Image (cartoon, rainbow, N blue to C red; front, side, top):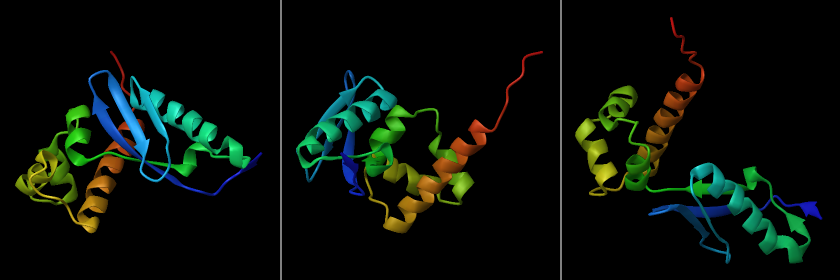
Length: 131
């Protein structure tokens, strides 16, 4: 088997028991109790689908997408007002995106994602101490 450079887009949805993901262009479906499990299961499902072609995909070949509303419902720890302030966006505009009342442009989406990633990077670099 050889690795493929093919990228597979998977749409992620929150369910009552965790998460599900499906590919729009291939018959690939998966579930997981959390995002990490979903990603591992989706990788396995993708490789099972591609097995007959004699190729396999790596995690970096999978593109997971989730809509704003579901993202902020699951990651409630990210405060939309804090994020809006961090990226220089009107908080009520970001709130409309989060609630699904408006759809952000491609550039606004990139700006929001960049802010979320920056917060994640900052959190991953912090060491908490107990005295």
